[in-house]
Length: 374
Ligand code: ATP
Ligand code: MG
Image (cartoon, rainbow, N blue to C red; front, side, top):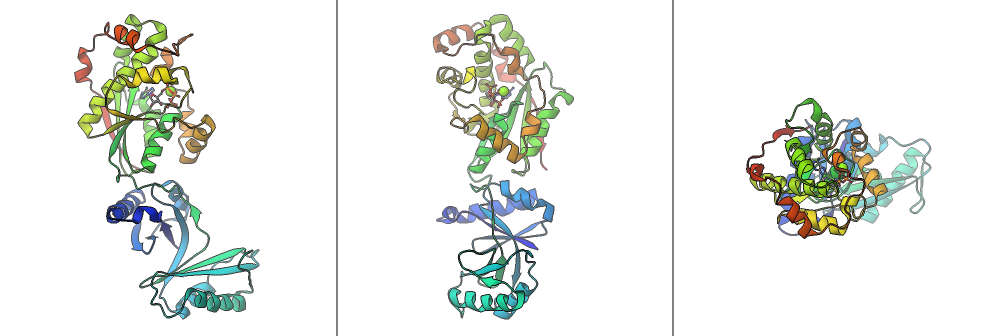
């Protein structure tokens, strides 16, 4: 069987239609090797998608709904032939046909198609029509050249295809929140690049495995992801030496923002993205976020700011990052968890402390970049 994919019609209005559909088709072809995406009314027909990959469609940004489908010529005899071989769940007793015509010049109305095909299924497959309480709903879409037949559609993630809304740089920690924040931005059409600050003076390949694994999962939803890993150890040492314990976390997050903003500018990213959720931890009070976000003028987004932990965990499980995020990892921030962290930091105080740091090396911070695709 092929698969029919629908996207939200609202995005199909106006001049963006071509860009939107072209990008979605392109993303699907790159994310599912060997699959072709052909434009039909309201969506695409995918050919060559293996059945065990269908579920992956549920999380691809820009896909609103999808279902297994068959195509044939538009005449009723051809449609009936498909319906005679349609695999019907043996427990199903009642059914309805839901015909729709994209081409209104078709010789029968939707109502007439429903009635004719309904009679046919009733006679040949032993099911009873029930328009309201049905076990099986067979959709028959009459397009301009072909008919497409499918059952109930599965819900996709919706949103916009990745790559239709510009580029952002997401600060990826080893935690649960930031990969979900990255995915949320993908759902709005942003192409996401990742940056991770590692608790090392030099990046070594093996210690970054968890982060690379997270990026690989995110690469199921965006065809290619750039991940930059920055050694943060020397900065941490400096912070430990010069900044009092209760301000270290804030100072370190400000430095991450400063380095990230430079990387973002270099890579053509227009905003920074973080996994902050209001009040979740001490560093995420309004006062502390104000102090941290003040570090750079670049636009910043925290797509999870209003989300509960349980919602975030649910989405992390759904996209497949939860188990990886739950692996033990010495995040560089965990070193800075003070017994009594400041919850209401004052910007003046932070700026004064920051002046004691030697930031001259900020201009030539070098990370290692990887390009990750599925
Ligand atoms: P997460 O679950 O994403 O780690 P968190 O609730 O643990 O978030 P913090 O540790 O305060 O919160 O970090 C807040 C945000 O700062 C993270 O979501 C991430 O965007 C960024 N961040 C923190 N540590 C790092 C790091 N080592 N490298 C890159 N980004 C980081
Ligand atoms: Mg964290």
